[in-house]
Amino acid sequence: MKFDVYCDESHPDMLSTKKPEVNFMVIGSVWLNSDDRDELKKEIHALREKHKIGPEFKWLKVSKSRIAFYQDLVKWFFDQGDALSFRCIAVDHDKVNLKFHKHDQELGFYKFYYQLLNPWIQESNEYRVFCDFKSNRRNDRLHVLEKCLSNSNPLARILSVQAIRSSESVLIQLADLLSGIVSSELNQTSISMSSRDNLIQYTKRLLGGKIRPTPVSEKKFNVFKINLQGEDDATSSIG
Image 1 (cartoon, rainbow, N blue to C red):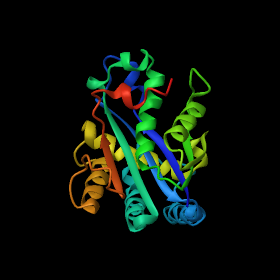
Image 2: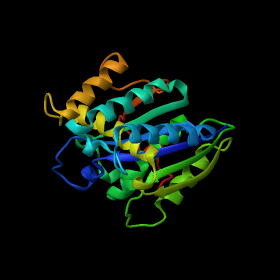
Image 3: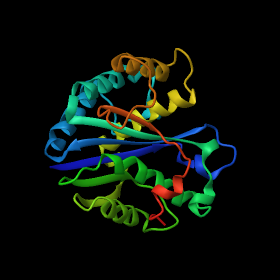
Image 4: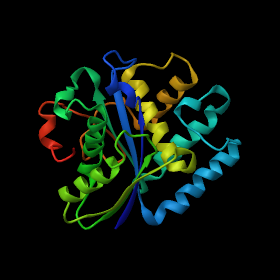
């Protein structure tokens, strides 16, 4: 089977400062069968048109005037069942030791990307990964990530890992939204009774409980809170 994976992140700058505004960086990914891509995009566009939403939606644009759209979008995501999955990795700033990443926060960032993607790659399947465009100091980061994923999964095919701008992809925008929900809940950044808090509480009701770490086997809404002890061992090939 062929799968598309769309990724975005919340608070990636956390790794580059000693005193970040939040504790957790979240990198999120939306997974779908490639054959379903066009129909899923069509349905998201229909929701946008119904609510008269502009060209781009994202967590930071959640507002009182648009809350109905965002609630409908989150409900739509859950209504897709196995056709659409979300997985994210939450990285605790206080537990990151950049010595394991050659004191290079950019390298560390893509090691965490590897930890996000690798556990869900299965043999005999093919994958295309799309990341939100990010200016990197080294321009080979995605190529190295693609190579490392391929080396770790010789019985799968990693067709590509490439960057596209979020404004060009409603599925990356969906990854941004879901990542933002998790990030805000873990970092406790939403104001009580605000539109964003409203959406978080709505998501929790659809989940039937809290937003919290899940086992890797949870395939609909997977939250991986990484244990950073010995982190260098799992990603030593990325550098």
